[in-house]
Every structure is written in C-alpha cells, then in structure tokens.
Image (cartoon, rainbow, N blue to C red; front, side, top):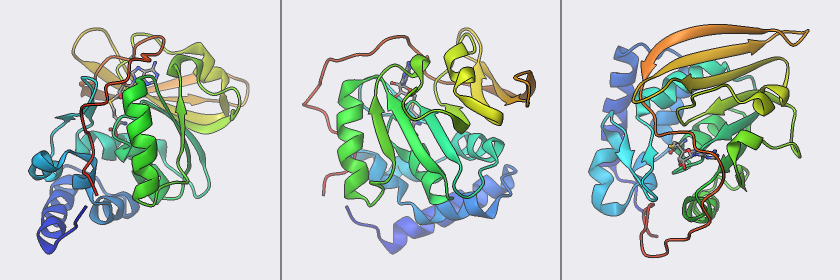
Length: 227
Ligand code: SAH
C-alpha cells in the first residue's frame, strides 16, 4: 500500500467537492483528507477511490459514496468517546471515519468473506481498535449494547426493533429506509421515555439490508489493496 503526493492531491479535491456539496464539519473533512481511501479498493481500481461515487467491492456489495459517508457521519453528530454500532462493515471505510473522529466503533457484517478480509485489513492499516463482529445486523449486538449512536449502511424496509432497544435514551439512529432502489435517509432520535422522533434527509440509494448471515467464503477475490 503506497500513499503518494498524487493520492493526497486527489483527496484534497474530494474534500473540496464534499465542502461544495454542503459538508461543513472540519473533523469529517479532515478524516477524508487523512484516510487513504484508495487502500479500501483493489489496486486496479485505486483511481476510483477519490471520485464521489459508490464502487463495487466483494460479495456483490459496495463501498458507499464519499458524500453518503459524510452525510451519515454528520447526522450522527459524534461526540468524543461515543459508542457507535455500525451495521454493514463492507470495506471498513465508514467505520474508520467514525473511529478517526473519536467514536468507539463496533461494526457488524453478514458476509463472511467481507468480514474476514476487512477485519484483517483494519489491523494492517492501524484501525485495529474498530471492533468487527460477524452476524446479522438485525440482531444488533446485545453483548456490547447500549449504544449512543447506531448507523445502518444498508437500505432497510423496516426499522429494526432490536436496534431501537439497543439505543441509549437520547440516542440517535441513522438509517436509510424504503422499498426498491431509493431510500429516505432518516435520523431517529429516541427520547428519555423511549419515544421516537424522525427527521427525513432526502433520497439515497443503498444495497439491501438482508436478514441472516452468508457463511460462504470466497477466497479468490481481493477487495483491499495488497501490501
Ligand atoms: N459501510 C460500508 C458500506 C457497505 S455496503 C463501507 O463503508 O464500505 C452495506 C453492507 O451492509 C454490505 O457489506 C452488506 O453485506 C451489509 N449488510 C447487509 N445486510 C446486513 C445485515 N443484516 N447485517 C450486517 N451487515 C449487513
């Protein structure tokens, strides 16, 4: 894995683009400036890492578009030390952004191939404190609950009750919700007595939030850059 001046230049451009699209939080912009996003893609596709688009990774999944990662992160309003549960580890990029800005991150993936590769990769790039879990995100993580914030990075058709239960009072869940190809980005706040308040932040497109796990391990493909 090599990070060159050219990569840094491309990151600077991406950060400008995110600013232009309305991302204001300096901590988030700094995370995009400092984390070499091209490490999260196969070497052949490194060029795509700094374009503001989603990109395919292993197991028919995607690394979310940079703007989507930035929006979801800003809606969570992370405070230093917040305990955050992410559903959908994927490439691990979103988890690293959350960790970089001070969250204590737990992240669940249902695809064994992705789980195995990303778990190893996060240690290699110095993000070993992100706690990776293999399982069905609909179940959350009773072991590490309750959480200050929960982030769902796959498109859900219903709000998972077990995840709401695992939120602390005044906790926040960000979840894309909707049938088909588009979802509404919702910010759900759980108040002191368990009531829920919803805010809608517009249309986005995600891979589906599926039930159960996929234990099939595909060893042939690589998703991250090799050392
Ligand atoms: N946060 C990721 C985005 C990955 S795309 C990144 O930064 O790259 C969404 C991910 O959600 C996929 O990897 C998919 O396998 C995973 N996913 C879908 N349903 C899930 C479930 N029930 N539990 C855990 N992960 C799930």
